[in-house]
Length: 239
Image 1: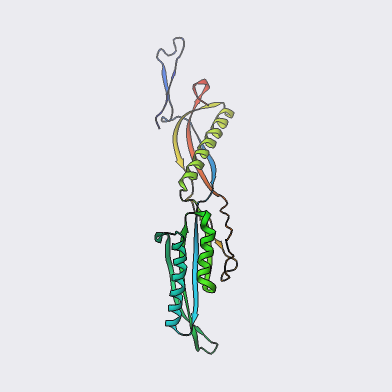
Image 2: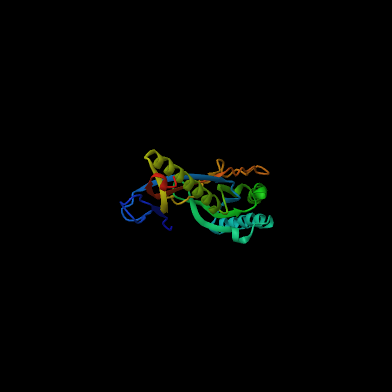
């Protein structure tokens, strides 16, 4: 940021030339303040972690059954308007089940899929359709809401943080009998934003009720900034 120069006229014969008082120069007293701002927004997308778990007498049969059930779940999602780009397989496992004596009693296959839903008005029906297609093999491991454009509320939070820091600076300078000069630096001290924690379904393995009610709530962003002001005495300042 450019410095602002102040001209101080000296009456009488003490100094015949005007003295330039420049903010942020070497030796200029400064005031460092911090401000914290917040902003909220309504999430507009939903991420659902689905799984299909099937048990069969042999490995081939368990995997084939799991594949068929998972395909039915994915078909329900795509027929409901979910794009292929919003569906991702995140895990596939096939493991034997053992009796207490170590005998293999069957095989368990599990397929995990993450789905991003961009139309929350239809999200409940889509989740219901996916679970219905998977039957008793379907699981809802977790779901989480998010903003597709989090930068919007992050910038509002930063604006609020700068406003608070400026207000704090003006009050502190006035209490010290000084005024705020130029802004010497602005530093973003915000911690990296993290997505909201997922909601874990309390009854995994039980089919979801028809027309699942889903409430997105709100998502909050917090920002912290640091401002460094030059301090100038008397009426020369702008505080």
